[in-house]
Image (cartoon, helix red, strand yellow):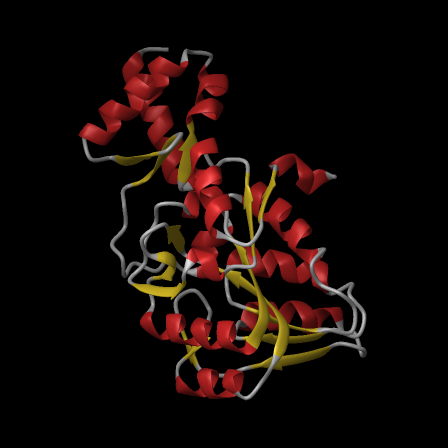
Length: 262
């Protein structure tokens, strides 16, 4: 395969999945690590991709860009499934949990339908629908109400007031991005306020974020890295980033996509 053909194929993969890893591209095209990195450099110089630690993503979105639920749901499916399975182990029968809107937390919701006598507070129509379809009489689902965002979150004063009147054992939080400087972020100002209300209502905070969220900074900060009692992410994060996060959060849990099939 000619370099130009390989670069076009790499660009197609980035656009299809939202991001790629150097290690995966080396296996995909049977070339050296250095060759792939040169290809990514060429594509980045042309403004077609953004280089990140260990790979590349679609061209860096602005801090206010908010992809829709359908667009996000096709990205990093295996990573999200592995993260969701691990996060489900944090939830005990008979407890009250808050689950924020997002595609990773939506994946998690499918595993939580098996937890008996669970009370779930959510600001996501999609997540509430998962529990509605499960039709468990021993589970209580509280949907906050509010203004709907492109990512199917319910936000604004109605949502915030509903959440502030509650107390839950655990918040399972999905985020748009995370970085050392900005912490956990979202591009939507009202969603950030709603998520902050959830953080305030919870005794413990567990953040669910795949490796592509690292280095992405949304307009508004939800919480600092140090506010997370647990951060569950995947093995796509570079080792140096994992070390950095381990020093910031209460507990760093790293899963591999293969765990989704376990």
